[in-house]
Length: 334
Image (tube, rainbow, N blue to C red):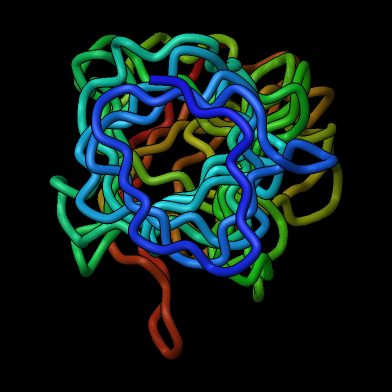
């Protein structure tokens, strides 16, 4: 059915098209069909040209929209209050996206930047997981924070120094520098010197080292007493020679008249004294030395004579209490 030259001077109502109707020409100078009222189509409508709608096009109860070509929306597409497709290509949504994302394509492997924090619940279930098997987890239990690694080693790498410090940054616990030292601290706010510091030659300890055991022969140790320690005073003559009983063995080269005295010592410690006469020599002992006979032995006076005396600290000296040394008899190696 084809209609041509449809014209109207007044208002026409009740024009109904049943089936397929083709309007070839219009009785108007610009070939425009102008409808002032409502047009009802009871069947399919096929429009071969462009449809221009100046107002709002409202779809009601539409279940399927079949667009063969490209749909272009100048100001974006908005679905309800949750999804917006912007003209510049951004997608905004406030709901939840489900699925494993295996079918997504064209997703750029670039940084994801959050303008605000990411908040997760307090438990391992709310952790940040790294690795296909969640090998590395970072989470908060509600009372403490946990970095948990279940596969291989956990490496903390940096091109610069690594600091383990307080939240405010006012105290260091541990510091390490590339190609340089590592430092361990105690109460940095009061003692800002590291208690243990490594170097190319070993470690330096600030303070006392307490150990329950020690291995090795100690042959390379310096500045400590290891094994029998010998004290060798200079040649003495006409004076009192005081032995520091922090040592174990003493050697005196004596000349003229000299007296042997002591200081320090610990009860039960044993010591030896070697006396070498340089010229005619007379050697006496302070009253701290107690000999079996009740009197000091007679030390040979001849030059070159060597005498050996051994003694043990019987009583350590204190305020109002004299030191007592139990001395052995003199042995003469003339």
